[in-house]
Image (cartoon, rainbow, N blue to C red; front, side, top):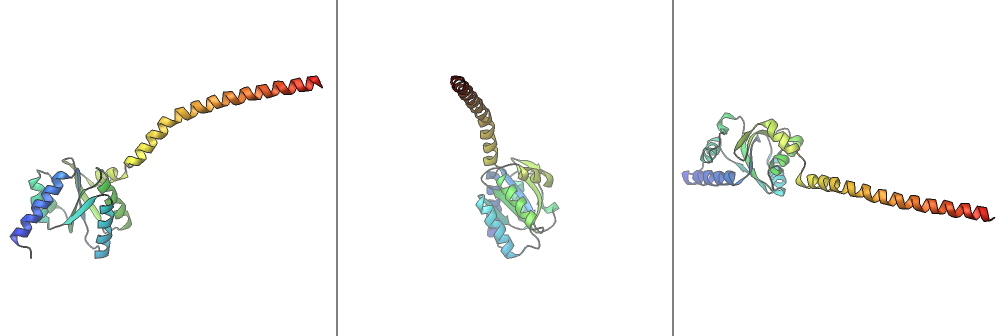
Length: 176
């Protein structure tokens, strides 16, 4: 049993972390084993995200302190709150990918910059390409016209050399 002081500390820390985080996701981990939960936490840590397990009432109080419209008491299962991450999509992406491997993990709802997200919203957010993938596409798009221009210039030089070679051969054949 938790003491009143411990409960207050959990609520304070959770509400503070939720407030700092750009994206917060609530998931149901019912039926998951301890090694599976540890594996999930490790996956989340790789993205600088954290998972906090607490009673629904404590989670509810923490969300009320952050002025969130999300009410965890309306949700079924054993709840965990995932927050933090390198960017807005890192924690939802890590959770979604893990939920594809382990069907016992269920994403229930989330918050992105104060806006409540549905399960579909979180899945769509998780399916977005990463920052690195987007940057690679931009660099490829910028590089494409330059590559085409270089090929055109190289093609003109090749054609010029081909014409000179043909003229040389015709003069050699005429001299014989």
